[in-house]
Length: 157
Image (cartoon, rainbow, N blue to C red; front, side, top):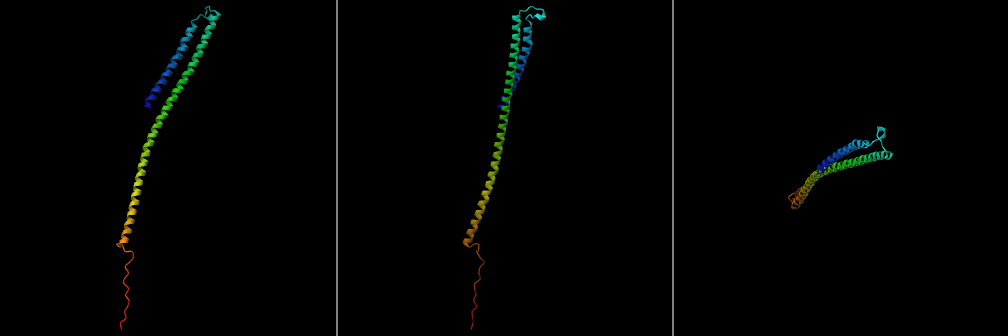
């Protein structure tokens, strides 16, 4: 899902860049031709001072508008790039979380088996000790070597 969103955002950024280029091309090519169609005294036309100042005002406004649009589109593109960057980071974090979960399960299993082995060894040792105690108590295992009976020499008269 995140990959699809990043792809859509990347396409949108490309479309915004193309749109910005188209708008700027139209502003730089179309507006000057419209503004130049007004009669200007340098080109032999008759123009009133008021209309010439209007043309200059329009040119100035068009330039300002063009600059503002460039700045706005650059800002939109930067924000779009940041969104794509955030999506990429979140995808990477998701992959790392999945890897961590897998590795933690492996470690948990490893230590569970170590614990089982340790408990088994402890139980076997305790059973052996209990068996030895029982065998000693019942006399199956002699505690000491049998003492031979003491023979006292008898005196014969």
